[in-house]
Image (cartoon, rainbow, N blue to C red; front, side, top):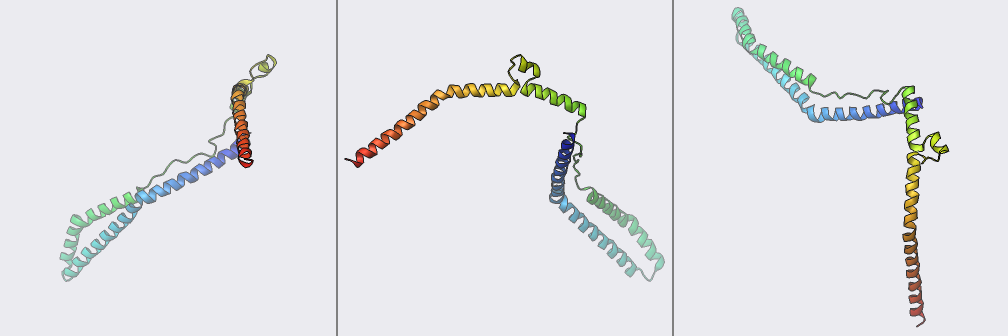
Length: 185
């Protein structure tokens, strides 16, 4: 029984994890897909802006190396460091904008042999009745009780069933008489 539970547990875990992964991928694509696109686009735009600013400084001050270096350092301090911070934040958002749902363990349905025996014993006694109930004229457990109630209910409905069958036969008989009367008239 434990091997069946093991197989069932693994099948359940695999099926559940497949559904969870599909949901996880769907949520990540539908909810956070735009984040990846937007952060990539913004990072590319900021890279282009930094390249253009650096190129502009080099083109403008190429004849004066000391001034070019000083202006480049000022721009780095005032602007490019801030842009790199924004890029780092965007990269962090891109890398962490997803959900990871917990997965089901393969042994989720497994129980110890002792607990299995206790559970089966209690369930069997409750449903079918114990050995003592059978020898002492017990009720046969829950299943016996269900059958007894079902049998009593069927007996109480037998009269109504017979009346309805009789009415049905009477209607068919009257219909046949009416058809014969109509044909031979």
